Length: 145
Image (cartoon, rainbow, N blue to C red; front, side, top):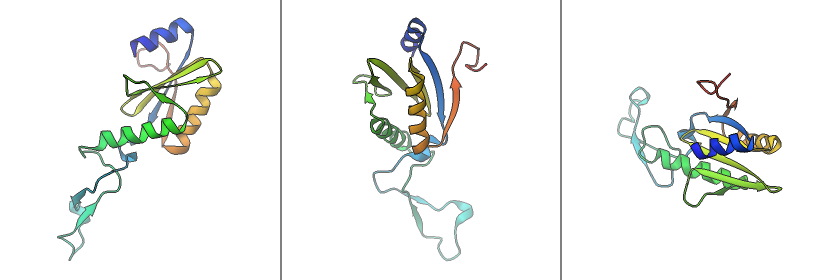
């Protein structure tokens, strides 16, 4: 991250921030996972039944991996490549310019000299996920004006 922020300062890149709402709930479970019924949702006569998960939930050991796999698939659909040695950094070249996205749990930090490509990426993410656009990052203490 420090290297990317240093590059952004040197190259005068734009730096934007988006937050994925309830990110872990977007993950798709690959294996069969069953859980006990939640206490307040047990129907009379069905006390011995269990619930089969089709999506990841918070607290599930696999939730982070399920979310990462979903996010990686989405970035690939948007024509980004994954850095070979850094699994949470994605990049794409457009007309000899680069756009770089870092993924930190449910936050995406976008580095680019091209506002149009940044906007295109945000639209693509919003079509696939619940995204909260936090806008440009700056040097204020909390990253917001």
